[in-house]
Image 1 (cartoon, rainbow, N blue to C red):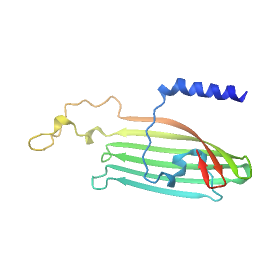
Image 2 (image 1 turned 120 degrees about the vertical axis):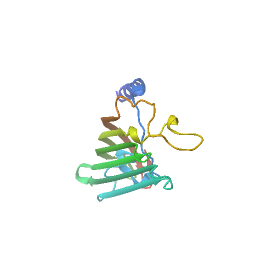
Image 3 (image 1 turned 45 degrees about the vertical axis):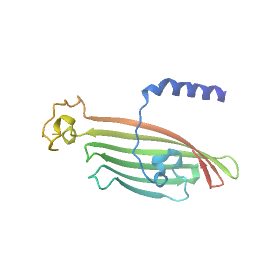
Image 4 (image 1 turned 135 degrees about the horizontal axis):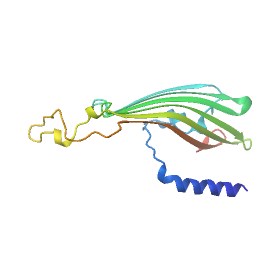
Length: 183
């Protein structure tokens, strides 16, 4: 019975793969942002934890990629669960392109043996992207001989410059002896 459910889930994932799109922000120390990495890590420590992350990629270029995130999660041992929230802001190209998300996560942990645990986590978030068309510079604005940039471009802006949606995610984590994690 379990194998049929697993097969049905895999078939559904293959069928819907053309409708799924994702582009995540990049953190140089991704392990320092566990809720962003995998929702199954929610509540995986004995006490609550607060994470504050800041990343400024290529700082010599004015605000090329600037990413902030704040997360908090708490373990509830009485119900083998963990709850958490995550807020992230990602600015690219001197804030010409902005992404913001606010979400919550839940994880349930099952003890498989004295040395192994399996955790399943889910995440739901509100996700928003905005494009500031006026901050973009196109090839027809650049004078190749002088390097000057014209104020206007002949490029037409898209019909919609902002997108808002709900984002869902899930993850698994298998832990051995609190030393080896597979997720």
